[in-house]
Length: 128
Image (cartoon, rainbow, N blue to C red; front, top):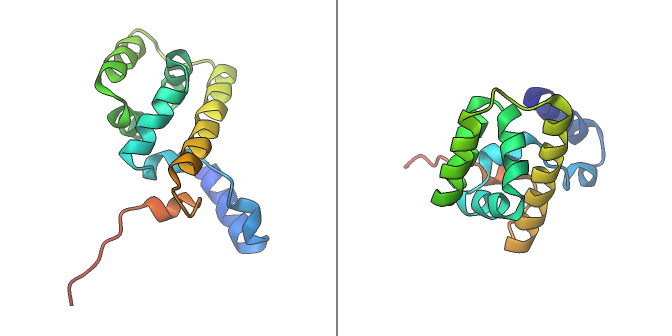
C-alpha cells in the first residue's frame, strides 16, 4: 500500500544513508507531483499501462493523476476505467513500476530537484 511505501521510505530516511532513498519514488510521489510532470508521465507511458495502473490505484490518487492528463487522454482513460472493475494485482504492480520509472525519468528531464518528492508539496507561508 501507499502507506507502507511511505513508512519504508521514512525508515530509510531516519536509519540509513540519505543518498540511498533519493532516487526512490513511491505512489505518494505522484500525489505531490506538479501537473506538468503528471502530464509528461501520462504521455510517456502507454494508455493501456496507465489504465492498468489507475484501475488498481486508490480513488484520490486516480483523481489526481487524471487531473494532470491532457484532456483527450483523460477522456479516453476515464472511459476505459468506467468499463473495468479494477486491475489484476500482478498487472497493476507492473504498470505501477512503469509509471514510477517514467516519473523519475521525467522529473530528471525537467530538472526538478531535489528528487525527494516531498519538496514538491505546496508550501504554506504565513504572513508576519
